[in-house]
Structures are given as C-alpha cells and as structure tokens.
View 1: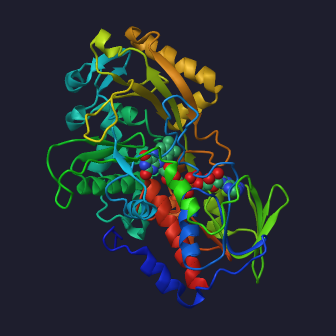
View 2: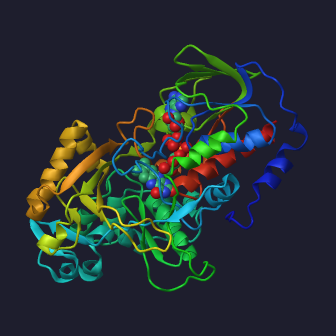
Length: 502
Ligand SMILES: Cc1cc2nc3c(=O)[nH]c(=O)nc-3n(C[C@H](O)[C@H](O)[C@H](O)COP(=O)(O)OP(=O)(O)OC[C@H]3O[C@@H](n4cnc5c(N)ncnc54)[C@H](O)[C@@H]3O)c2cc1C
C-alpha cells in the first residue's frame, strides 16, 4: 500500500503513463499550455516536474514573488531561520528520491530542542517533579505523561487505526468527532484535557485526523534509529541508542537541507522547461468543453487543457471558478478548517538557564505557550562549529491567533516580557529576530489544514476528485503522508490523474 523509496521509481511511472503522448517540446505561445499549475509550493512543483518530464507543456503561476510556499528559509533574518518546513524524516520516500535526483545535500539536524521546564498553575515546575507535583491534577497513568506530550500520548493511547488510510474508511467515521469529545468519552480527566487544550483546538479539531497523523509519526519512528514524535508540528527525536530494524546503522534523523530548505523548491523549479511565473496571482478559472482559462489579477491569462490548483483551500476559495463548484467540492473548499502557527525566532545572548538552574525550554499555560531553546551544537560529526544558542517561541491554534492579532514587534515584545516575568534570569537575554504568523500570510491563511469534527466523513474522500478540468493538490489533499512528503504525494497524484486523462 505504501510507496517506499525502494519501490518508487518515478521515471518508470511517468514514462508508462505518458507513453504515446510524449512529444518533442513544441514551441507554444506564451498564453497556452497543456497544463497550468497554480502555486509553486512543493505540491505544485512536484506535479509540474512530473508532467514536464512526461513531455507536457506546463506553466506554473505563483502568486507571490517567491518560490516555495510553506518552505521558506529567511536569508534576510539573523541566523537564517526556517519559517516553514525544515525537517526531513527517514520515510519521506518522494522527498528523498527528489533530493537524490536534484543532487542536494542533507545535514544532520544540529540543534535539538533542549529539555523543558513547566510554568503551570502559577508555578515553575521541573520536569522530574511533574508526576508527583500538587499542581498536577491529572489521574492514574495520565500523571506520568509530560504536559508537552499529553495530547500526543493520549491520542496514541486511544488510536484504533492500524493502516495509514484507515481514516478514509466509512467504519472509522465514528472517530470523526472533536478531540474533546473523544477524550471525554474515553474517561480522560478534565485536568489532562485542559493540558491538551493548551496546544490543540479541542472542540474544533477532528480526533480522527490527529489519529492519522499520530500513526504516521509512529510509522516514521520505525524507520529511524531513534524515537520520534510530533510536538507542536516538529519532529522531535529522542535517541534511544537502539537501532530500529531496517534503519541504516548510523542514520540520524531528522535531517535538514544544507544551505536551508528553500534550496529544495528552488532546485525543483529549475527542472521545469518553462520558468515559474512569479507575482501571478490567480483570480479566476473558467472551464468549458475544450479547456480552461486561468486569469491573473494583472489581467494576463493562460489557456490550458487542464489545471492543477496546488494552493491551500483557504485561498482557493477566493478564486472565481466556473462552472461553479457544488456538493462536496464546494463544501470542502469553503469550509475545511485551517490552523495557525505563530513563531518568533530568537538569539540567546547568555544562557539564562545556567543562572536559574532550570531546564532551558519552557512550556506554559500563559500566552507564550512554548519556548524551544535550541542547543548550540549537538556534536554530530558533520555539524557546523558551535554557534550562539537560539530559541523559538512556538504558539499554535487559538493562542497563536490571539498573539497574531498584534503587530509583529508588539507580539515579540509581549513574548519576551512573558519569559522574563516567569524566569527573571532571562531578563535582557532574549532577542527576537523575526516574528512570523502563517495565518497572516495572504496566500496561505494558516499553517496547515485541519479537519473540523465531521468533515472527514462529509468530504475527505471525494474532495480530491477533479472538478471538470480542475485537479487539486497540496498538503490538505494528502492521503497517507504528512509534512513535505504529503505535498509531494498530492502533486504526484494530481499529475498521474492528468496523465490518465490525456
Ligand atoms: C511552521 C511550519 C513548519 C513546518 N515544518 C515542517 C517540517 O519540518 N517538515 C515537514 O516535512 N513539513 C513541515 N511543514 C509542512 C510543509 O511545509 C507543508 O506541508 C508543505 O510545504 C505544503 O506545500 P503545499 O504545496 O501544499 O502548499 P504551499 O507551500 O502553501 O504552496 C502553495 C503555493 O501557492 C501559492 N498561491 C496561493 N494562492 C495563489 C493564487 N491565488 N495564485 C497563485 N499562487 C497562489 C502560494 O504563494 C504558495 O507558493 C511545516 C509547515 C509549517 C507552516
């Protein structure tokens, strides 16, 4: 069922499917193409790359001036933070295959998140004291789960899924309820639920969607020589010293792109026969029996046989589409939920944890939620020499939306002031280099899709089916994978759909 790196041979796939339609590259007028791909994120680029390799004439229209979407290395900020994706997991078959083919280099992630101190119920608590601390009102086995791991741990405990695509089966629709209802139904204590609510939108998130991600994370860990789990959207690796069957003996995961993750979409774009057209914000898609016109805000348009919308549904809903969408397509595109992640990237002047004797990172029930302090050097053999300690405020869901209402500099000030209030030793030691809200990005409007309760059962299966000549791709249309791999998976599916229609 799962295409892995060994079994996946993309050139065989495209050649077999494209077969007779592979033609020599024809000179085409600038305003016509076989396929228009809207969006130069990983999903759109992967679809365009496959179709282009199959001999089709492909135009990619990107609304912003930048290629990569949610892959964005901020070369213009101190310490070059990754505003979006950076971590590559060992089971990312398509990403790893593309890295090989593009000749890109990976480096071991060199800056693991340092251990957490908690500030909960108005008290600073060391991780080792949590299980027996009076502020910990959770019950039974819950008491042993750390506050940071509470959500992931409880979802794993009640997760009935065995296969990565179980979530699409009708008999799993009963788990398409809110995380809150699922946990309450399983007898989870109110205190543990409150803890989960610090990092998850409990009432507005489908438990089934988080179960699928949890299972995908467990699958990832099986490939790795270390135990990994998702915390706040990051693959956090905790070395166990054990070697997982099948993993390369010295493999250390996750890995990062040498020179920054943006190198990946940029290298993919270079593979295309026609350069990505940037600053082409698509406003309308008009389809008829012969083809589709894709119109941009600047008045230009491209006519093609097929269109792939590789943009989040949060922005696809702003594009005028005729014939008008109906049924599941309308419901999914207009109603699917999106989550917010806000991050503030910082440099630490002096390691304040050496002053207060607590663990460096912080997890709180105050507005700052999480401060990840990143080690300045993991000691990996191919790692760069020691640099400054860095830190990232990681705020998700409603807490992130609240802080993102503020101007970026005000939000940054608030977050620093909060750490200084909770840990006076941090006073003057944290400098925010960049505050970034994904919900504020006009061409994303959120960091990722998030099914609301009932939405998987209502439209997850059918929403990815083509609407006339319009195909959809993007992480929100994933079936098995997550993160960058899911964007690649979806682009591949959309490309294959079109190759099957020509
Ligand atoms: C904070 C954060 C951290 C992450 N960390 C990781 C990680 O470490 N590892 C991992 O594997 N994944 C990670 N991810 C997930 C990963 O970044 C995404 O799954 C993936 O990049 C999504 O690609 P996409 O093509 O679906 O969408 P996008 O990258 O959003 O691409 C959509 C593109 O469409 C363009 N567009 C939108 N509207 C229009 C329009 N009207 N006209 C023309 N163009 C338009 C946008 O500008 C954009 O370029 C992270 C994501 C975030 C937000």
